[in-house]
Image 1 (cartoon, rainbow, N blue to C red):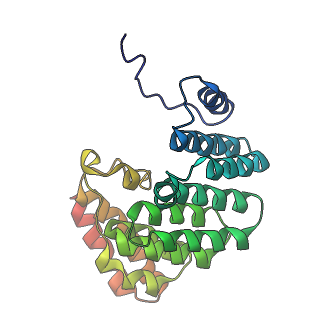
Image 2 (cartoon, rainbow, N blue to C red):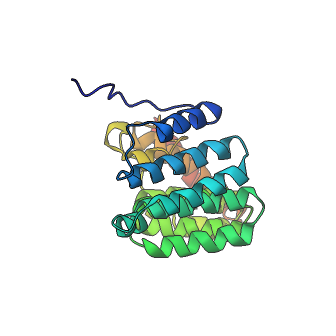
Length: 236
C-alpha cells in the first residue's frame, strides 16, 4: 500500500529514453485525465528521438503532445508545456535544415513569454543550434536583458566573431557566475565551461585575457598590456 517507486531517474538520451517513454505512455497508471502528463511524456520522447536523428518521429510526437492536452488543460498547456513543445519543434526544424522555419518559430514562441528567463534561455539554445549568427546574437541579447549573468554568452559570441569594439562595449556589464550551489539549474546548464570557477577572481582573470586580446586586435596595444597585467594580478 505504499507510494511505489518514487525515485527520479534521468534516462540516457536515445533508445533507452524512447523505450522508457513508450512504457510510461502505455502504463495502466496513466489515466486519460492526466493529459498534461501524457503531453510531457510525448515531448520527452520527441527529445529522445532527436538524439537519434529521428526528426520525422520527433515532429510527429510533438503534434501528439499538442493534441493530448484536453479543453480543461488547454490554457495551462499553452502557457507552459506548450511553449516547451514549440521550442523543441524549432530545434527539430533546424536539424531538418529549415532554418527560416526554426527562426520564425523561436521568435513567435519567445513572444509568448517575453519576460521568462527559462524561455529566453531555451530560445538561445535553439538559436545556437542554427547556422545563423544574426539570430544567435539576437537571442543572446534577449537573454542578457533578462539574466544579467548571461551577458557572458554575448561577450564570448562577439569575441568569437572578431567584433572587438562591440565586445569591449559590454565588458562593464559582465557578471561572474555564482557558486554552484547557488546557481539556478537552467543557468548552470549554460555554464558548462564556467561551472568549476568557484571564485570571481579566476573568472575575471579568464575574461580579462579575452578583453586584452580584443584590445590588441582592435589596435590598442597599451590598453591590452594593461588589461593583461590586471588579469594576471587577479591570480597573484
